[in-house]
Length: 321
Image 1 (cartoon, rainbow, N blue to C red):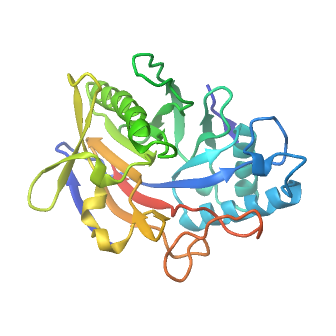
Image 2 (image 1 turned 180 degrees about the horizontal axis):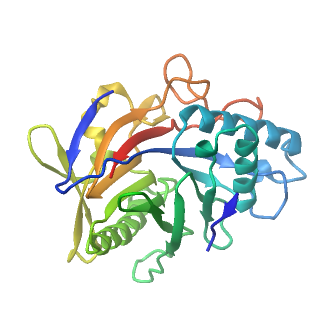
């Protein structure tokens, strides 16, 4: 692996000429994916001394994760809740051993997390990646102290026809006070909005933001953008700048489910947002596999049973550049 650290059309079409390169993108929150090495920042259920977690269980879970990646066959795979870059190496090595087709190899990868954090985000790609940046916030104007938050990753994907700007997100969860957590997600939204606006100033650019935003699509500011499309507005905290992006969730009925099932209710908190010279199509909640039960709910990983995959469903889409 080359290390780079530092079906139905949905109706979204930006104007411009397209060369027609199609890229499948998969996003999945892999749910507390730790390795078997102790470093002191693990969640307590994975910490040595008081946990059944060990190398054998890690290897089993790693095999299951790689089985899903192979089945979904994305050109770009975005993962949340990965502990460290060593896991990215382990995933890549396993996938490489199982593939004899060069065009199926994930030759590029990157990973980022905040210092001292337990988990971060990773990207595996068959297309070349370059110029990774991480965007974090340091806010001291709120009444409460800023909690630990994951940075937003910005990566250039080198496609045949044009540059694809990929933003990877894992926003603040709703644990604790929902009102307080919303404040911090708003700050993360501000970073993403600003960077999308700036990216679109570059000529011929396509933009896709992916990840677990811990916020249902209904909680974003939305506007009607025609009879069949909807426009999401991502705003900066100062209100001076906003980015209009497209979400494919509005092409799936709310009654058809979401990506996260919590307290007997679906939530649509895992997202793709598109902007610029790009077509986004074939958006799916991926439910056809062992990672989902017979009801289409996520088959969550449970340490006490040593079974399961994740408490989120993977989502996928195709983008045409």
